[in-house]
Length: 298
Image (tube, rainbow, N blue to C red; front, top):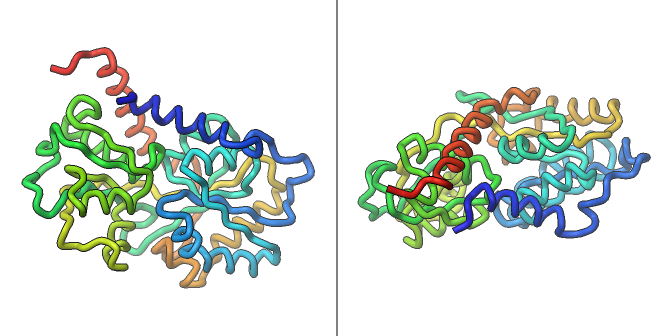
C-alpha cells in the first residue's frame, strides 16, 4: 500500500494535470468577475452537494445582483487547485484542504459557520458495524478502516489523529482504505465491508435522518475533539471592493434556508490561525508516518 503522504501528493498532482483549464491562471481583467464562481468539495455525490447548496446560491445571486455558479470538484484536491489557479472565485474548504493549498497560493479565509452551543466547530466520528465486538479504538488493531478523500479533515485526518492518539498507526496497525466520500464510508461500515470508518458526524447524522443509513446497522465508537469549521476562502487577485461585498453577503445572511445546510446560526469572520489545531494534527501524523516508513513493524 502506498504511504498515505504519497497518496495525498499523487491526488494533488492528478488534479493539477486533470485538464489544461486548471493550469491557466485567471486573466488580469478578472479581478472583479462578471459571475461569482463558487467551489464546493465533493463531501458526497455532486448532485447532492448542488442540491443542498442551492438556497445559498440563490441568496448570493439576489444579494450580489450577479450570476452565481456552483462547481463541485471531482475530488478535494481538484477544488483547491481550481481556486489556486483562478478558476473559482471563492471556495468552501476544510481545514486540511485549506492548509495544504495555502502553502502554494495567497488564499484568504473570510467566513466560517457558527453553531448553537459549540460555536465554529464540528466533529468527526469513527463508527463500526453494530455487531462489531470493538469497544475502543485499540480493538480496531489489525482491521481495515475506511476513510473519505485523502485531503478531508473529518473524513481522514481527524480520525487518523484519533487512532494515532490511541497508538494505532496506518500501515502498521491497521489498513487504510480510501473511499472518497463520507456517504461511501458510512455505507461500507453499515454493510460490514470494513471494520470501521471515519467520517463527519454531522453528515452521518443527516444520512441517518434522511434514511440513507440504518441506525441499527452502525455504532459510534468514538467522536473526535472539536474541529475548527470549514472556511470560505477567496482566491488571490480579486478586487478588494468586490471581496468586501461578498464578505458582507456572508456575514449578514439571515435566510434560514441558506444557513440550513451548514447547520449554522450565522457566518462569522475567519482568519488563518483558526485552523492551527489541525496543523498540529497534520504535523503529528506526518512525523509518525515518516518514522514508521523506515522502521520495521514489531
